[in-house]
Image 1 (cartoon, rainbow, N blue to C red):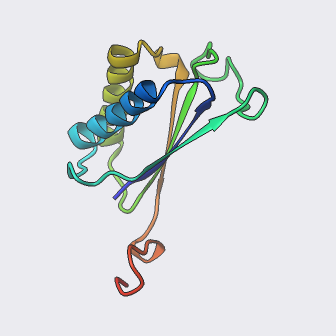
Image 2: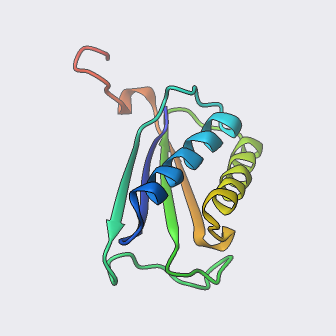
Image 3: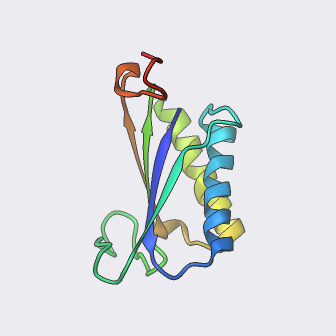
Length: 123
């Protein structure tokens, strides 16, 4: 079960945010072995000066449309699976939102089952 925090600048429309969320979920289902009904996301929007990133570090240039996806997963994925996911997500965002691949950053962090609780009695 991945949990994703999505960070971007303020000012995007609700339709943009929904498409961003839907594109992420589609890529997770298609390329990251996630069940279709497994969607947990939080979108954090920041004012100018609150989302700080290097516009040219490893793959820039990045614009004000920069989006960071911080994904916590319950089980590790192979490098090949992650690569397929990264490529699919970037392609969907470019197709659906005209978001440049240079403006997409993804961080995947693995955890263990005991790091998650879905209800007090699920452990």
